[in-house]
Length: 174
Image (cartoon, rainbow, N blue to C red; front, side, top):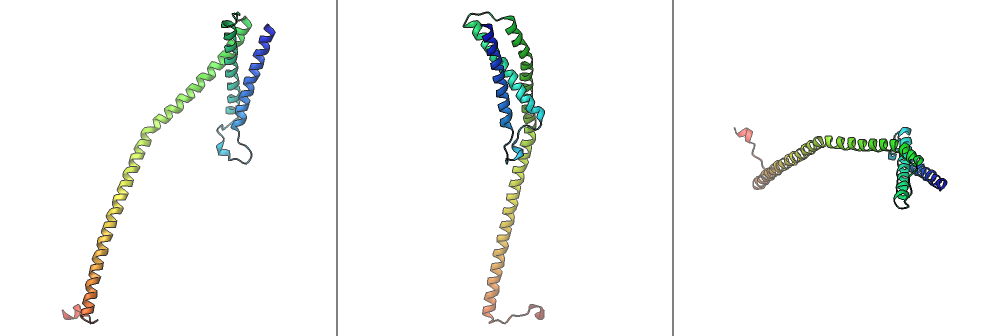
């Protein structure tokens, strides 16, 4: 019976390592794809992902199976099983703690950027409103100038038609 449990432990550990390896291989870009789509930047991150996932999965599976046999099957957990759980539990808890610290650091960085991003958004909105007002002001001035020029042109044309093309030189009369 102990040999079956050991075989189960070893097979679950290998399955967890295989799971970590499959995650690592999914992260690598396929031939012809853009390298910028790759999330992991160096081999150390890939190794940590594979090893960390394997260790954590193995620890969870072994501890869960030992707990199941202890509670449901009413069997005692042997010292060797506790040793394996303890040996895997130390690195697994360190990995989990590091992942949570990394997550907390990323979230803190996002929160730290929020005030700057908010002020940049407000400045951008103000600049856009100011630009729109300036464009509207120039458009109104342009429309008024065009209307003034059209009225002046209409008056000049009417004066030209009335005088039959004879233009009185204002400079000579003075």
